[in-house]
Each structure stands twice: as structure tokens, then as C-alpha cells.
Length: 386
Image (tube, rainbow, N blue to C red; front, side):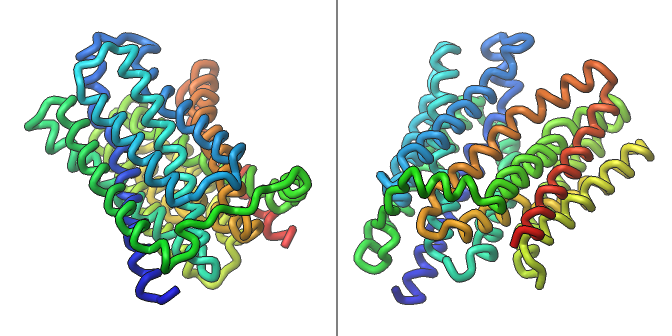
């Protein structure tokens, strides 16, 4: 495989990640318009997000179950097209039940594409996975910052259903270019058409019996949970409890910016990945607890920046470590890690809401610090286990 071909294929894969950033960020921008359009109330307002998460979880379970029976590049293409089709369908005047079905299908496509993009990248760059994984997730982070700004500008000119069609067409073009490059690379890049060897039950037991891998599963679970605590609740806490909506929006934007910097920069540090994960988690926990003790908007803003820089690389570094532990079956190890991450993102907001209902919003926000502490403890076990 020539270096030029590898760079071209890598660039095409990175472009396909822009599609995942676009369709992931669309719902948050148009959510209020969807609620008004369908006249949703109470728990109904969260059904769209829940259906996307359920679809993504189903896809991750399927990719783990059918490991060794698919080609990662083809999954990215076909499941990417499935997600694009769901986006275009959401732009049609559907009954709410069918709209929810489209959300589920979009989540299904996203879950499969997301895990296979990371696993495929690990196959392309076995000698330097961490740096390239950081870049891949860094591009997603850039998309996380840019997508709301772009779509909010479009929403001022077009109705929300048109936004779905615009995003669907843009994502279709991004997935199509990856399909074209994959087709042209089949004779040049062997991993484009390679299927992993089918795992035996003994292989699965060996991986799941690896203490480092179990520690890694818990590391990514609590790391994703801690990040979800910031992403889901910070805007509401700073807006409502601290009466500062202007700073609230800035908190989340700066968290994404600093997380993106972390994803590009952390793999270049002259430290072992487990040590970066552990140190980042404990620094994030300390910053978050200190900010809540001060309990002023600027303190929360600073904590978001520190947490982004310290823990922003948790997910890509964890995926990179998982691939290094199981280099011949990156699809399976990545899928199981992504399942752990997705479960954390589903359960964490509910757990924090429960604590808030019992002890108040500020007490619930301290849960984020505790989650980062747990994240650091299990990351430390990775360091000790190697």
C-alpha cells in the first residue's frame, strides 16, 4: 500500500466523519420547532433523542454480534446511506409515530457508522492508532462546534423540515465520496475489502477476561458519563440556578472547543495513554468540584474549559487502547467499548436527574465530579495492569 493511497483513503474517511457530526447535531438545533409543530408535552419532548439512542445501541449490539461477517468500509457506506435516507424522510410531513421511527432508523445507521469508522481507522493505522484516532474524533468535535452555528443560520431562512433535507443531502454527498474512494481503493488497500477473522467463544472469553480491557470498558463508561453530565446539564444549571443564560451557552461551546484541542493534542504527549486518561479524569473532577464550591458562572465556565482539555480525549484514547489490545478484531473490541459509552450516555442524565429531584440541582451537578473520579480510578488500573 503506497503512502499516497493511504493518505487519500484516510482523508476520505475523515470527510465521512463530518456526516456523523452533521446528523448528530441536527436534532438539538430544531428540537423546539419539532415540539411546537407536533404539539408535544412533557416526556414526549424527549422521545426523539431516546429513539436515536435506542437505535444506536441496537446497531452497536448487532455489530458486536455479527463480528467477522461484515466489511467495515461497506458498513460505513450502507449504514451511512440508511442514516441519510432517514434524514430525508424526516424532512417530509410525517405523522409523529413515523417521525419517531425515522429517528430510530437514523440512530441505527449512526451507531453502525460511528463504531466502524473508529475500527476502520485502527485497521488503516495500526502503527500510530492513537494520533489518528484523536484526529478523527477531533474532526467530529469541530463538527460539534460548527454544526449548531451553521444550522441555526439556515433555520432563520428555512423551515425545520427543510433543514433535515439539506443535512440529508449534504451527508449523502459525504458518504458517497467515501463509497467512490473505497471502490477505487479495493485493489490498492487490502483493509477496504477485508473481513475480520470470526471470533470464537474462546476468543471472546479471552478478551472479556483481560483485566486491562475490563478496566478500559469501565474507563470509557465513566468518562462518557462525566462528559454527558457536562453536556446535558451545564446549560440548564448555569441558566436556571445561577441566572446567567449568556455564560451558559458559552460554557458548552468552550467545552467542545477545548475537547477538540485535547483530541488532537493528547496523543502527542510523551505519556502512556492510561496515564493521560487517569490524570485527565482526576483533574476534571477537581476542577468541577471546585467550580461548584465557588458556584459562580465564571467558575463553571473555567471548569468546562479545564474538563475539556483534560478529559476531551477520553473516548478516542480508550478506543485506541482497545484496538491495541485486540488488533486482529478491532470491530468487536470497538463495538463493545462503544456499547459501554452509549449506555453511559443513556443512564447518566437519568441518574443525575434522580439525584436532583431528591437533593436539588447543585447536588446533582456534583455527580459529574464523582463520575470523573471513578473514570480516573479505572484508568489508573489500566496503567497498573500494563
